[in-house]
Length: 472
Image (cartoon, rainbow, N blue to C red; front, side, top):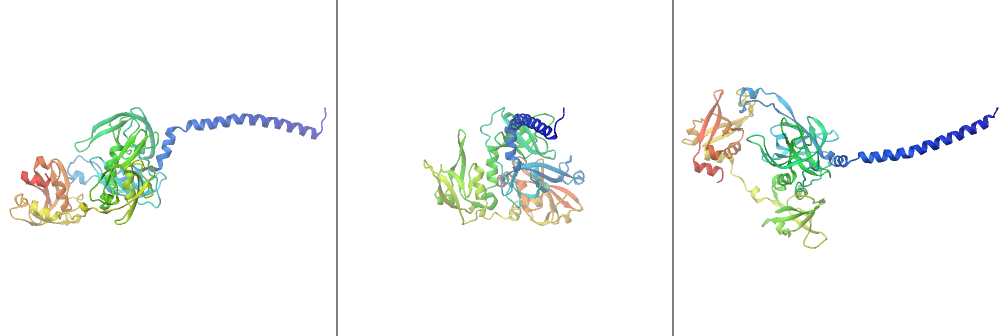
């Protein structure tokens, strides 16, 4: 049968319309399925990671490779090559304050912090606490950075989901998921490093994760990753954030960083899921007392910063200068609305009191006057030596004279018990003598350079002198 081209065209269009209807009918359920699948894939873990990943940093540095020598002046130690170090950290303030482990940045050179977007900045160590194994770094970025939300470790449950983020084996921004395996673990890594009350987790913690965050499913910081059990699988440890906050708050305080005093001591109060930061002490004679603060006041804001944890008070005071008011909003009693109080930080009277000159103290204790010298004076003995203390004068009959220390010697190191320190400033001597081991040894071994060699000289102290040195 013959048909015209026009009638044939109508038939094609009709079939095309039918096919499009079928396709549309099929695409609708498929699109709905894809949307549902996308929602299913966006788990609580994904959302938690998205909340915090911009606040996690990778840390790289260089340090001397480990050797079997316990004394840095040995030939073996001197020939040790530089090796790259790695670790993680977390931003606790948009101005570039980074919290990490002390062992990540201890005795390293050239600290570099890499952000999530790959940008890098040089960093410097502001404060550290070797006992708690924490340090505060500062990076000077050209923009405001993303800080992490700080949670609590007081309500952790064994079995709840936790997440680690960090620079695992140098693979930055690595995420792993696990659970809280146990609480209140005590771990001894060495004679010098003992950790208490740790969180145990099976979320992967590897070399490079140290200093990075352990977060909960809400994306809140609940711990700082610190150690992993060697030769084990799924046994890692983190410092609980409530203990970390206490130390970090002190390290970042205006009193520690700028010798400024406000006189407020705060604590956290929890009522179910609600948390309040309240004044637990107003120090007598302080600027806070003059401003009218009272014990029990709830802190709401410091300047433009909302107070959600104990760190926030000190964060809000970081840029305040003496004599300039810091506006602090509080709630008092049953009054719902916040009331403002202005506190003017003042120079810390304790920090402002001049400390005794270390040279004078060393002269009184040991009977020597010293002068720092550069590496060039001791380079022939060991390339590792960073300098020393040239002995200018030895007082006759002094402890130094009794130990046969002579004018012209260069003091380069000291030993108390089994621990060694270098001496390049007079206050290094006092630091060594104030070590707790002095109460048992009552002596110190001094290493002096004489006639192109290092000679040990032991100085012993009377019991009364040791008590005076240790402040007892």
